Image (cartoon, rainbow, N blue to C red; front, top):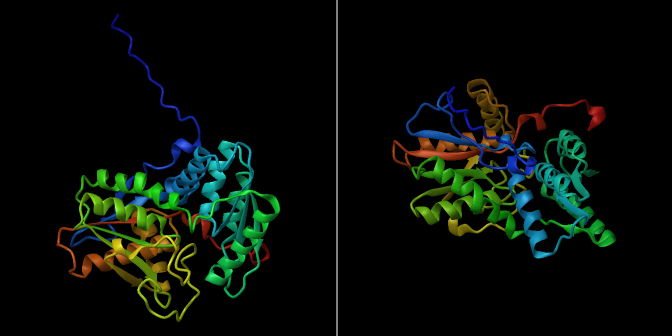
Length: 325
């Protein structure tokens, strides 16, 4: 008999080891050229979005610094995706988690967070409508989190101010894109919320090759990074484009901005599903639309590779009965 094959197992220790190393897919059916459109499949993280990366990294760094002790309560204000990511990390690491979120953010996010053991407090909207959250709505959720921090002494993640948010993408998302393209990436395109993804990835890519161009995606009428007055504070890009320049954002790594309308974001969200078989959210639609505009603009070589992000699963946006809103 021949020698027995040596067997090796491939078992992950927890959901935390499922975060990152997401595939980079070519959207060749949706966009046929010139150039090539590549998308990072962040909806494949266990919490369903790119926010898993920063969530785990921010919690781990706080634990390493001693700011967060075993069993301590964690609090954060969220539009949903960061909350889901924190719920993944906190459930595995044993931290009770309380999240505040505007009622304008889709209820599926609250259901997801609570299914992972978190408590989600849905804060009434100030000026937006369901599915359209403004900066004032976000501030109401943040104010609720701040008051709870004072009452409980919990660890407040503060994703909009936390430099570990940027570091998460500088050490993971950026290097993954660089290696997956074998350094052939010409441009990076993404919408911004906290700006952690944009800043971390852009910093890393430009360190490898300063010629790589990095673009911010903003919705029409809400373009503070471009420096235009806000004429439409409410838009469909939940979790981004709140009408203010994020605290973590720095212009030094940005080449320009690209404007996308709500209608274009929705159109491309559906195109990604119908042509590529990927069900993603509105911000992913906006990212892909902006990448197509850039590739068609003539600003890049004809054989350019443009990388963008598919932030989250479209299941977080499916319409629900009004009784649940």
